[in-house]
Length: 221
Image (cartoon, rainbow, N blue to C red; front, side, top):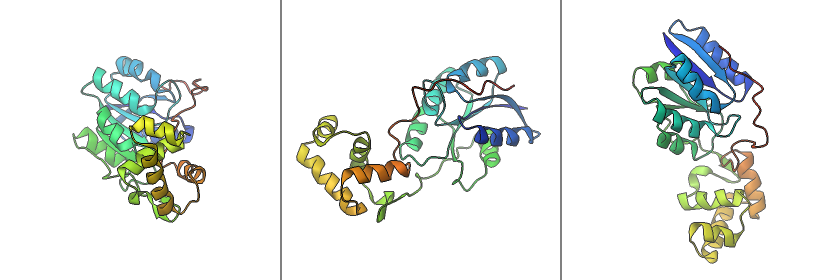
């Protein structure tokens, strides 16, 4: 019997994954959390085999950071990172954290149980790239890696000079790239652009609310 730990800050999403586990004869629910900070404790206590880790969780760390810690502590543990957000950095970060598979809740063509079974068999289930997001008159696929780096800092509220310093670019070079992004997307200024990009969740400057680290949904065993 494969013991599964679920970590997700959304109750509906957690309950969906709980039902998948409970309705499968091959899986047993070891715990269900809204806070990633408690994952290591449950893994030790319940000898967890598989973790379904949402990216955005309550607590002091996001799900990918928590997955990286679990990978170091439990090298044989299987970890599937799950998310409903298309943030462009998540797939790369999850790979670097040592996750075994990655599943988009609403977008992935495979259902979650299929991904779980393949992962437990030692297979790696990964999307080729983040889904394309429509940004103005273009899509995210039309933006270069440099433009995305600069766009992320724009979404964090940095000014031209601050972006230049952060990336070791000249201020004029930063302005050049931002003009290109505005031309591609059709927005008239970087404020409109930042609102659109964060609204689409292609870039999420802040992964969780540090002011709300209460765990309203305790461990379910």
